[in-house]
Length: 180
Ligand SMILES: Nc1ncnc2c1ncn2[C@@H]1O[C@H](COP(=O)(O)OP(=O)(O)OP(=O)(O)O)[C@@H](O)[C@H]1O
Ligand SMILES: [Mg+2]
Image (cartoon, rainbow, N blue to C red; front, side):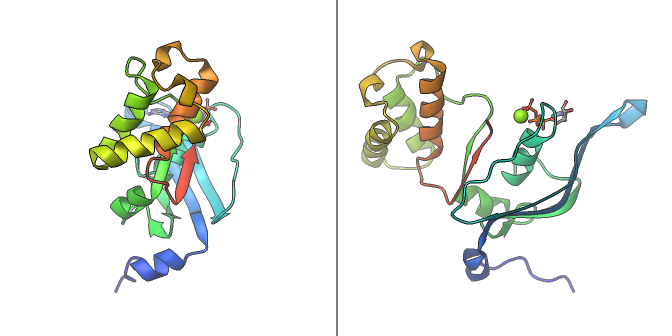
């Protein structure tokens, strides 16, 4: 009989934010096309409460690793847990506990900074008053209060990145993934 997937108390007590063992992911390779081995046996162990940087040249597989760990794609082989939950077997439990700032900005250029954060709050199911409050807290925390009513299309790259980060912190996730 297969062992049961991690239960809530066990997962909560895991001292690792991320554990990956032998992750593999290959793109292409069908009909004689060349295969790209984006991940070729990635092992990682990131303790909770730490900041972990994963460096590598362009095309090394960093975004692919983030996509596997945030349940946006499945590994071909290997095993990973995030916040104590298996990314393959318990993707919903993983998604509830993570934030992701992707390599490309997710904020809307035309909505103002404040409207963007309120929209993300609503998408995360906060009620309107809570979403408004959280937006103001985050604008303050990320040094964007002065630009709250401006459109990100006119922001500098760094300001846009800060707004992007703020939008991943709406629910104060247990594990935050930052792809560059
Ligand atoms: N959807 C895809 N289909 C086919 N190949 C892909 C796909 N996504 C990534 N690749 C390939 O997988 C390899 C790893 O790509 P990935 O985007 O993970 O690298 P990266 O380390 O994030 O690079 P960068 O530093 O440029 O962001 C590259 O060779 C890339 O061309
Ligand atoms: Mg990348």
